Each structure stands twice: as structure tokens, then as C-alpha cells.
Length: 500
Image 1 (cartoon, rainbow, N blue to C red):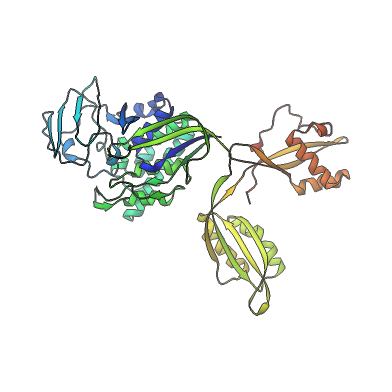
Image 2 (image 1 turned 60 degrees about the vertical axis):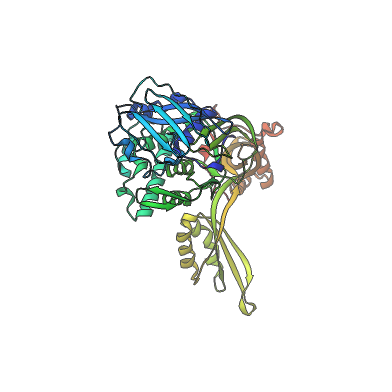
């Protein structure tokens, strides 16, 4: 399985994700739909972070100069400013607007001339950046543009004419951002107004990342725990501890985990968190990979003892099972009838249960009873618990936060068996790991039993022959025929069995 792995030890922002994806091999041309739809362009460059050569991406305006008060706005209101490659290092800036800027940075002398040839001499920060720009209208898009509602952002994304998977992923990321904003401010999602994350640069970050990810064509995306940094951050509503509320809300719905530190700065922005929440599975450590490419996306901060980069690795995975988020519900019953217990499998499955087990138990006063254990997705737990209570009359249902389970990828193949002059169909479940390696094949017993009754063959023989077809065992091929349409069947069209 082709895997993209992010190393989240220095957090992530939207532009860091863009830069890492470009540096690991995504095509710059894949970003064209965003540049065609919005008055922005992606400015791609390179820098060095503590000896690491890394890519940078800035989203810039293409419709003229910035408003007169653009510099006075600063970045205090922007939760995404921490990683912007705009040479802002949390120092006090005194800007004059005749484009002759003088910066008083304690012990740092900066002389910026705005013919777009920037020279930075920092005593404590390593910057050696040279940018040559042909046009004067390359104003950073960050902080500019309208503050849009969630519905307006959705309308913009849907109007870009994106490939369906890209649009779906981008809308997922913005829905996570919208739900985070709504939860923090106590508003309804459809009425939620984004602040910085609804501006053009945030739209460009999210949609651009989804386009680049689609261009890479990987099968799986994972990330190690994402560092948030520590300290406080200034935002539109005041100073908040890091991670800010929106990042916490996004992380609550993500598969990956957060960790504090390792520096006093904001490392994980809401936009970066939302992109990775929409696309990435969480892992504790980088997975085993046969690495084909690596790339680094640079953040805006410079630290004396560590490179501020988001690392991306692409390669073939070494196999493994798929992670599935679950919770476990259970209750003890001492008065359930056999009929009630027998019906729980179907009724609880209809309510969303993934698996149901009924185990014998000894209750108080040594009375025989039963322990009912139900595996369900976290979002289905309340509904399944209510159904369990209604069907059994239990007065309480316990929930154990199991977190997740590891499951196989499953598909169902329908094979045809030729016995005498008749052809019979049997469904066969095929289990494989994350790389598609098949490790178990099992014919459906009910299908095999029906064929056995019609042919007078033993059930075990029918199952063996059906499984042999999937394995490609030529020793039984003479007894088997395909479905006669002359084409390979799509195993996905046969449907899926719920994993247990």
C-alpha cells in the first residue's frame, strides 16, 4: 500500500502541509484550479532550517496592492500566523508605508527594500533568503479578503470544479473547522462565520493540500502525534493558551493525537489541524516504509536547537491491519429469555452495532445469567445502548472506551461452481492487510449449505472448492466455471460484510 507519512513533531500549518507535499513529489501544476478560481497565486521557494533544505509556500494576492492598513493589522488576530513564511518573529515592528521599512528588533538589524530583494541579518536566527519577484503586487494573502460564513466557503469550493474526491476531502476539512468554531462560540454550523480561516489564503491552503494529495496518488496517509507548542497566542478574541480552542476542537474529532511543546510557540494551527484531521490516520511512530521520497515543508519560526519543518515520507507500507475506532457496551442480564437473547444480534445490528456477544455468567446469589457485550462506533453508542435497554429491560449499560481495534480489509467475491450440468454461486469473504496481501479466505456457510443440499456434496467440500477458486487453485479448476460474462468480476460490487 502506497503510504504518505507526516512527522508531526513540529506541528503543522496549512502552508507547511502544502510545502511538504510539493517537496515530496506532488506536481505544482495541480494547484491550478485554485489559482483560476481565486485572486491568489502560490509562491514556492526554498529555505534552510537548521541545516535542512526545505520548501516554502506563500499564498499571495494577484489583484493589486494590499490595503493601506495591511501592515498595521499584523498577525495578532491570525491563529495561523505561527508558521507563515513572512519573516515575522514576534518582534515589535515600526512600519512606514512609503515602502521603506525600518525594523527595530532588539539586537537584530533589518534593512528591507521593496524591490523584492530581501536581505536578513539576524544575530540569533539563521535566515539566508533571496527572493526575486518580477511583479510588485505579490502581497501575502494572509489576513486579507472577506470573513466568510461556512456556507459561503462551501459554495466557493463547490464552484471550483474539483474532482469529486478532492472536493469531498476539502469540504470535510472545512466542516471540521466550522464545527470547531461553532462549538467554541456556541453557534450553529450553517450560521458560523469564519475569521481568518475563511479568507482566501485559508481556502487556498485547504483546497491546495487536497489537490496535491490527490496528485500524489497515495493509498494511505498517517501522521505521528502533532506537537502544539506551548505558551499563549493572541487571536481575535484575546490571548489564549496554546493549543487554542479551535485546534482542540478539531483534534477531538481527529484520529491522531496531540502533544504539548517542544517550544514556547504556536506550532499547530486550525487550518493545518483540519487538513490532517480530514486525511490522516494517527500512528504513534512512523510506520515501516520502503521510502521512495522525502520532503520538508518549512514553518516561519526559527529555533536555535531544532529545524522547524514538517517532514513527509512516501513509500510502500510493510502491511498491517486497519485501525477502526470503537467503543464497547455491556450489561448483565438475569431474567432474559432465550428468544430475547437470540434476537439481539439482529436488533442491535440494525441500531449500528458492529458485533454482539452473549456470554454465560454467574449473577448474585449464584443465579445463572448472561453478559451481553456490544462493539459499536463511538457515534452510534448512545443509540445502540438505548436499543439494548429497550430490548432487554436492563436498568443500565456500561461503556468501556476501548478506543480502537485492528481489523482486516474485507471484500466479498461471488464465485461460480459447476457441479454436473448446473452452476451454483457461493459468496466468499476475503481478508487482507493494509497492503492488500490476502491472509484468509472463507466461504459463506449458508451459501455452501444450500449448494450441498442441491448437489449431495458435503458442505465442507463445497466450501473447499469455493475457497480454491479465490486462491486460484488449478487442481479444482475443472470443477469450476466463471460466471460466463468473459470479464473479471469486480469484488467490490459483491458487497461488504461488516468486520467483527
